[in-house]
Length: 223
Image 1 (cartoon, rainbow, N blue to C red):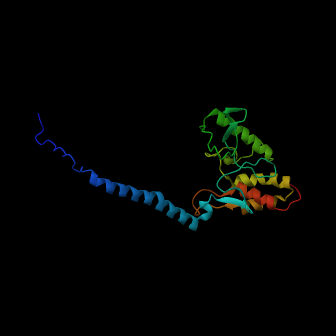
Image 2 (image 1 turned 135 degrees about the vertical axis):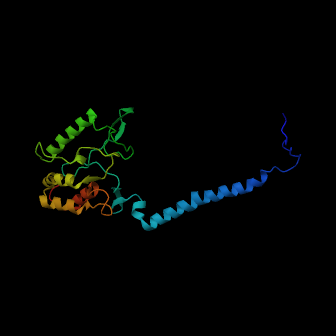
Image 3 (image 1 turned 120 degrees about the vertical axis):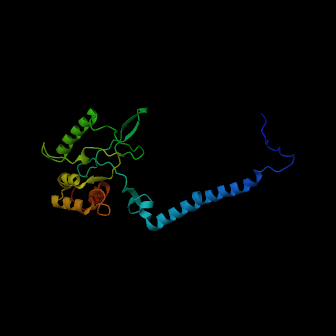
């Protein structure tokens, strides 16, 4: 059955009804592109540089004109004369086999956690081994309690902080390695303890990189 009101064919040479929409569509698209793709990014970037320049530029830590790291990304320290960060599960390429990976603590190019559940035997074994190593490195008793952040990796593998308890337990080792009075090492930890955000969020913590830089800046008779 034929339609009662069939569409009227467009006469040859007549203008299509869609032609009148082309101009508004193009202008609307350009307007949105300018606002969201140019004006808004410029405004937010300008506001960030004006109000929070340090954070907007990566929270970089400098020694003179040299960038030595960021407050937001941890670094690996293993020597007895340095405070150690928490374990890291990040990986790096195997130089012997490009298809394999090797443990590379605090590899900022490959942020990740172990993804092992709390009942995973591999995680339990790893925590037990780290606990033994932590006690031995810091001269603790075999049954001494160990802070959880000292034996577990963070979700990113790049956590720049350790707990205050973790840092204080390492103070004796660092003081002995550097020939410092224990009280001086403990005081340095207190000086670099960061409080809760707004007094409510998170826990007091110590930025390991800043603490170790402060150690190196001290004049001691032993490296």
